Image (cartoon, rainbow, N blue to C red; front, side):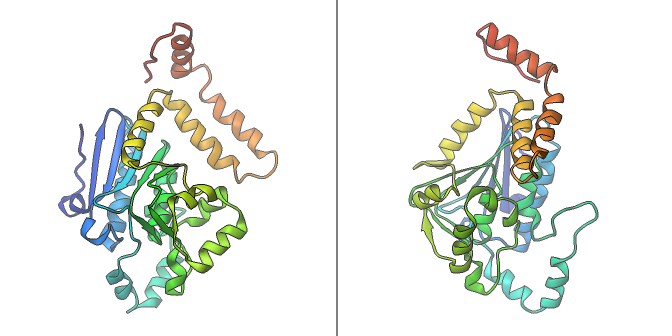
Length: 274
């Protein structure tokens, strides 16, 4: 098992462990229901950036310590921002060179920039920034009685941590508008019916680990290629998806992991991928 060093302060609020090609990222402010402080924003972004460079990682699990996934923005952080809204507005429209996301969006968007599949294991609450973080994963497994809310309307704002990059792929526009405008709370079963989560399970972290073990048995090239295929083609103009398919396939077919998958299938053995 590998544990990356992120700096003491960040290690206190984010745990990262890597074992058997699976990276488990745990938000670690259980006494605050893993609320998003400024330090948490920075730590999540840093962990995601580090994982982009971890070639051994084939699947990421994102979860929260204690009884909850993430309760959203720490109210003390909002009070701090309220002292200088002009600065906050400037930060909203500023992006680092070469980045699509601003500082606020990066903790969620980074999981879509990572090439490998990301699974969110959700218990307790996922409110506001918490549900946006969960939606940024490729898969979401939640307890049936977990609670969700796109809660920003309660505070007189809209969700702005990257929700535009994933919610349109998961549900209808009228449902999205209703959830954003009302900020109402709904449970895991309704989230499943709305298409916002992948499955319900009483022990989402265990289920996420089992799913991750299934995924790492597949070619890493397929995992990365499938994620890219869906992410790009779901919002592509008509016909563009055909080009995306062939472009991704041309970088998989005939290379080592493709050949190994074919040989393992023909020889009825477990594949050994690079």
